Length: 68
Ligand code: SF4
Ligand code: SF4
Image (cartoon, rainbow, N blue to C red):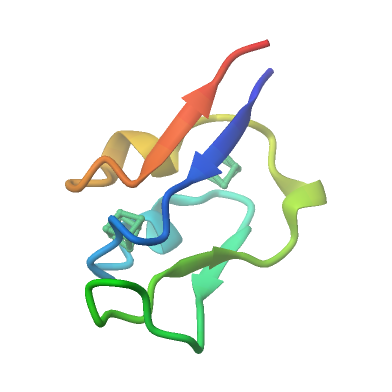
């Protein structure tokens, strides 16, 4: 189905993607990014179904869906 690519330095830590993920794949990182936010991180990538809901809701285009 594809996979996601997360650009942690674009993330502004709104966590809309965390709430949008039906598989609870995403969570907050404990290290700040280049913008000074605690960005999203991928907790359990093996659970990702490639639905791209996270990429769709991200206002900062920090998550990209990659088709293969
Ligand atoms: S929706 Fe985008 S900006 Fe918001 S926490 Fe997720 S990756 Fe970061
Ligand atoms: S693609 Fe879907 S399952 Fe994978 S992290 Fe994003 S919202 Fe969650």
